[in-house]
Length: 79
Image (cartoon, rainbow, N blue to C red; front, side, top):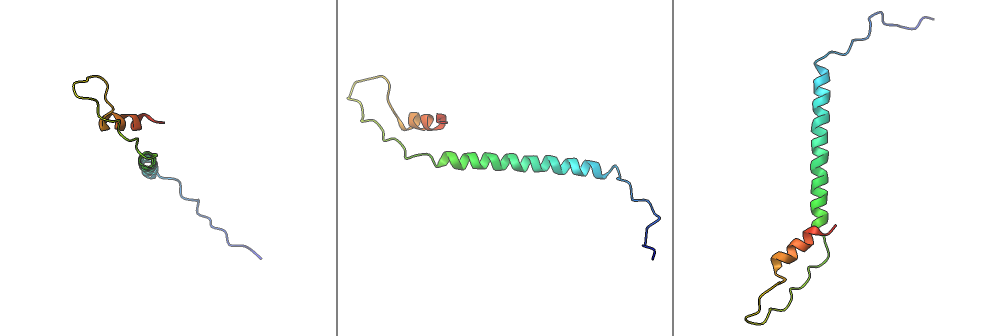
């Protein structure tokens, strides 16, 4: 009993398919990077409850004030 064998050689890889593979790799890397940035942004949004603002300073006092803007900055620097 003789098994069927093809006498034609296997088709060689053509050069036009190589850039498509590289292109899909680059696109995939971009999608993975965007997903990582999105995950980091979602994680940052789920930080613990915001700190309450400090009581207002007495009239006429100047110096450091813990404003909502400063609190937001502190939230963004947490690791």
